[in-house]
Image (cartoon, rainbow, N blue to C red):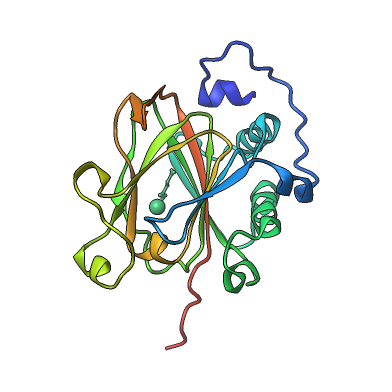
Length: 227
Ligand SMILES: O=C(O)CCC(=O)C(=O)O
Ligand SMILES: [Fe+2]
């Protein structure tokens, strides 16, 4: 089955056939460009980390594994399957995470796939403390707005970030397919991330209509403490 049958596509020009090998992780290091944010310490956005073909290969791997079935979310624990390990490898080789995170073994041992129909979102949240620092989110298929907001006043008091007034009380990111978002430090612990439910986004004057979106999140579980 082709990825388009599962995820749908507005783009009639997309080919069904892609080079499905996610090889040469080291070459991906050259892809895209990296943004950081003065207002949100620890927030890193690797734009266009995956080119179109690599994005399609990821999606095809998910189709081949029938990751979603009838659901819109799927979780994996333990060792990562090939395409997830490839994603972990490119993140590792790009070395955007602090060395204490980037060099841990394994770098990630948990994955969550999310599928959003047009207009759907996810409520603002801080990921559970059972996951360590260093969270990676790959966007596929559609753009969307990710809203970063300071979690609470306590976090503000502790100097976890700047909170401006009114509309500037946070940062809105327009995530595009192929972008990889990395949450570390304050961005992971003291800022919420969420996707508003709406059919189109207007971020910094850029108006973008949403399609169906898929994301892949990689995390590392906090090891269980012996009783
Ligand atoms: O889909 C996304 O971009 C974010 C997913 C997320 O934040 C989560 O599953 O905790
Ligand atoms: Fe999350």
